[in-house]
Length: 184
Image (tube, rainbow, N blue to C red; front, side, top):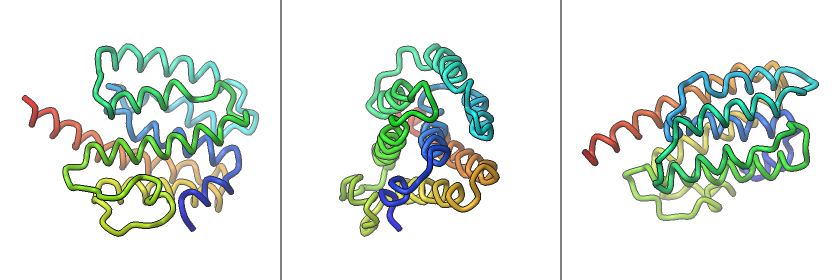
């Protein structure tokens, strides 16, 4: 099943987790520590999800300070993902946000991958993987895994989704670090 299909079939928790996971993997671009989004992950386990907006505001405040002055395209995409997050976890905008985060995260990985990726992000999301660069391929797999785990296991799949996201964050942190050393 393609990533686009998985997003279209996901429930509200799966959509919120998908968007949050994309954002979480891009934390190295925002200068945030690994715990910056942890309270939002905890909120996903709560069926009521009532404190989502307050937790999101706190994360935005924390990450805005960390990312001040950053201005390359990849960082701007990550900042937009955070800014666009809906204040209510169960709002209709969560599907739009999750979809936009998927596109932005794949684009970020495409921008940061030194290997050339000749196709657009939309082709990747539809399942066409010929000529895909390694970093983009790994991000695509992570996005699919998060949605599949949550579709199959619901709230009990959140731990696995967080683990997948943490792995991706480590990879992106190494890419960002290598990139900044190359510029120096």
